[in-house]
Image (cartoon, rainbow, N blue to C red; front, side, top):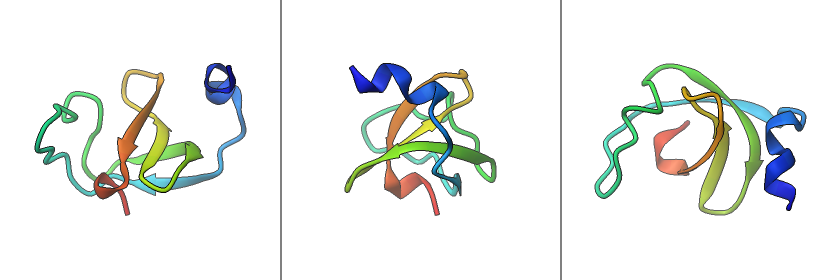
Length: 65
């Protein structure tokens, strides 16, 4: 599966977290406001970044600029 190799994949770009105000999920424990994250993959709705846990996580684009 390709997603197992994303952590070692080259960084596409960097994005800055602008909020952690999630309606349904708790993201404040894995994302920090004003911190930049390395983007490993991207879809129309999600961005996959290396979060504060050191693993690749998929988050809605609403949290980043």
